[in-house]
Length: 102
Image: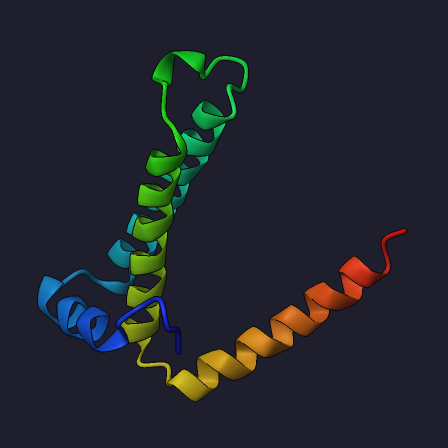
C-alpha cells in the first residue's frame, strides 16, 4: 500500500492493541488535533506562539496520524487493492478540482 508504512507491522500491532473501531477512530481524531496544534505553533499562528513546536514536532504528529490512519485500514480489513482504488478515485476528484482553479 505504501512504501512509507510497514502494513504488516501495523496489522500486527492493531490486532494486539485491542481498541474498538470507535476508540481507534477517536484516537485518529486526537492525533489529527495534535497535528493541527503542532502546525499552528510551528507557523506562529496567533495564540500559539508560546508552544514553541517546530518542524520535527509536525513530523512526529504526521507519523502518529499515519499510524492511526493505517490502523483503521487494518482494523477494517481493507485490502491494499481496495485502498489503492479508493485513493486513486479520490485523487482524481481532487485533481479535477485543482485543475479548475485559475
